[in-house]
Length: 126
Image (cartoon, rainbow, N blue to C red; front, side, top):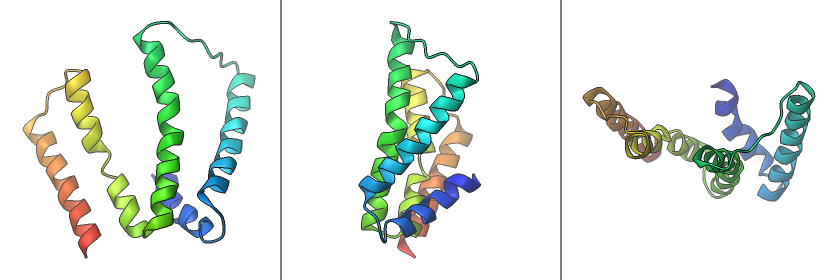
């Protein structure tokens, strides 16, 4: 939580002097180091030719794409606006889990989602 919370601020400060492309390069370097550590610790990248393989690929593509979009948003707006909006991602998770995983949207989850929306609205308009 702390590292994700700090990311918006560290990125915004970096974007004062560097382009979003430079942030992507340094992020890629860090991911490369992480890959080396994982492989050296015995992790083996195996891909199965089924739906789980497709989801594996999507799960690998979505984080860097999301990070690029975050950097672009931070370049164009205040961190105090961008980060709360991106923090509403559980709404997407709830919707996709209901559609693709058959998870039920209980009253409690619906109320929680409504509170998230209300929170984002309040943070961005005041």
